[in-house]
Length: 189
Image (cartoon, rainbow, N blue to C red; front, top):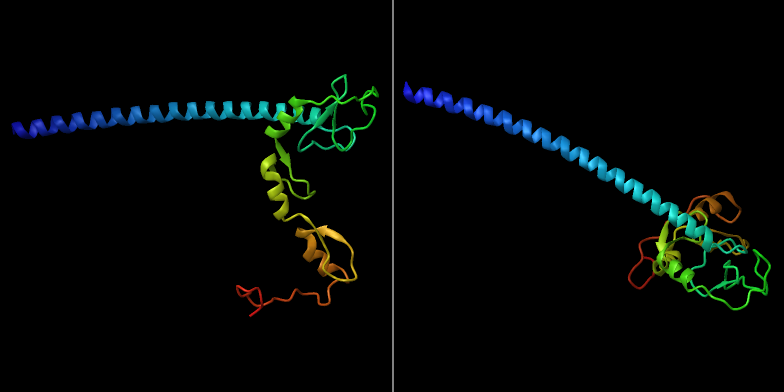
């Protein structure tokens, strides 16, 4: 009987401890979720601020002639601080019309080297660091290609080539022909 009482007492203690632990776990989960939400909010705030800074830098770096952000230097600057890319530099500043001179902005080149750039192809929305941009543009699915038909001189995005071939007189057959798998030598099997 004494053992049964002790077992019953221990069971009650265990149940109370389990309830206490469950309450503590739920409290910690709630606290963790609040902290996680606060961190997410902070990340969103920082991301928003960085985007704002990036947009401001992009606006300042954008050449007023070609309307593009240069991908490398030199970036020329007039005495009033306006920037012009190397391809568009002329005798006078396109913004304020003062003599351009040969001033270059090292800060602009540093920023250009450290921001992400948009792919140059219209339909592509990907962005890359300047050192990865050229590699992407060589294989971009939106890169410009020539129509393979001899009588067509149209240049079109690779991603739209099949539509072009299906909708134009460029295609001999309205359906693409499947070529057997290629061997390692490059010839069809």
